[in-house]
Amino acid sequence: MWNGLRLSRTLLVKATPDNGGDSRAVRDRPGPLSFVRHLFMIPAAMPYAHVIADASRRSAAPHEPAGHSRPLLIAVLGSTGSIGRSTLEVAAASAGRLRPWLLAACRSTEKLVQQAKVVRPAWVVVTDKQAAADEVLQDLPADTRLAVGQEALCELVQAPQIDRVVSAIVGAAGLASTWAAIEAAKTVALANKETLVMAGPLVMQLAARTGATILPVDSEHSAIMQALRAGGSHEVRRLLLTASGGPFRTLAVEQFASITPQQALAHPTWSMGPKITIDSATMMNKALELIEARWLFDIPAAQIDVVVHPQSIVHSMVEFVDGSVVAQLSPPDMKLPIQLALDDPQRFDGPARRLDWTAAMQLSFEPPDVERFPALLLGREAATRGGTAGAVLNAANEVAVEYFLKQSIPFTAIPQVTRAMLDDHPYQATPSLDDILAVDAWARREAVAWIERQAPP
Ligand code: NDP
Ligand code: MG
Image (cartoon, rainbow, N blue to C red; front, side, top):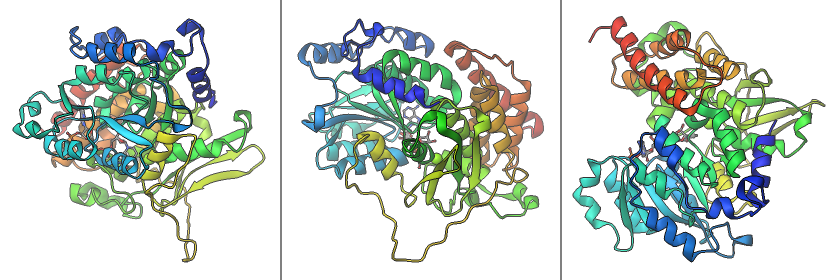
């Protein structure tokens, strides 16, 4: 338990058989990319190889600077999203400790150009090839270069200049670039929980092998990472993931079928991107987080519980064997876990909001209601079964959320589609990454077919 993370941290600074006894070899080596290219069907041309090669010739210091003698260079994957924008705020408030070197997004070229004008990164990447033709990209600062496509992103994320990678692309689309970053032994601030939901064991094994470090950005997992420091891994009894319960915590279950996207997008405590906001309303987000915690902390699903805490102040807790419960508290503001993942193990006086202890405050806790939120059962099942179950749950849920947002299915159909895909899928206990990508494609296809059978277009 928890050793996965510790082990990989140790490898970051120690020589290992894998890197030929040289503690810098893994990080210095230009990323091979062959495996990731094969898996994600990325073409063989490496138009950005010169960037990586030049830098590794030039630089004996792709490693994190000791004691921050120079800024940490960061890559922000999904910079135009909610986590990406908060990351840039954290960097701006870091007094030069964190400097964005690469920004990446899919289609929001205008936002990307605005960001580039402010932070002047070395690179921006637009993964959508059509959007990359937008005229607005002509306005990029002269010293910022443009790269296009997912293959370019996977290649550039391995550049040795990069100290930390913020993985904040939404959904399964974030897996390839996160995988590439881990393959290149980067320190990854992981917001894209889908990476671990889909391929947790393989991702953690890869990190252990390359010496990459994965630091959680998800506020619950960040809280657990901090609380775990209060004891040894053998002293942990269980993890307690807190959940706000979302906007429908107290809504009568009979009314769930008529919930509209607009209602579901109004989260009571957190401001986030649309997909995770819907996931919070169904509590599928907590299901995904349960799976994320299972692999990140290497702890059986039976030792992870969910507690509803509507105020979103206690971000999660660890119960130790003696009955002590250690919690992390702060206002619901993602800038804090982002900052911690970027500068761990150091803390600095950043832009995140603080609790006001001069005002009265009430914190309440209650058990989750699985009748209202059956997604929780699906998450526990997938975390317990492992194998391909997480990838199927994730893919079916992504499809269902998309259909709900365009008002093609009711809110209650989201866990139903996911349930059906979990039941029907050709389960494999120890899949390869190829198998996981195949089952992801299968679940997307079948989920659409299931939806169309229920309500023909
Ligand atoms: P948003 O929808 O706000 O942003 C998504 C980002 O991903 C955008 O920058 C988007 O670019 C980019 N993106 C989408 N598809 C691609 C692609 N194919 N290639 C490159 N970039 C892509 O999402 P959030 O910031 O809310 O969430 C991001 C991740 O963080 C999710 O995995 C979520 O679960 C996780 N997370 C989020 C939290 C939050 O508070 N928001 C809390 C904890 C975890 P574009 O703008 O061009 O579409
Ligand atoms: Mg969370």
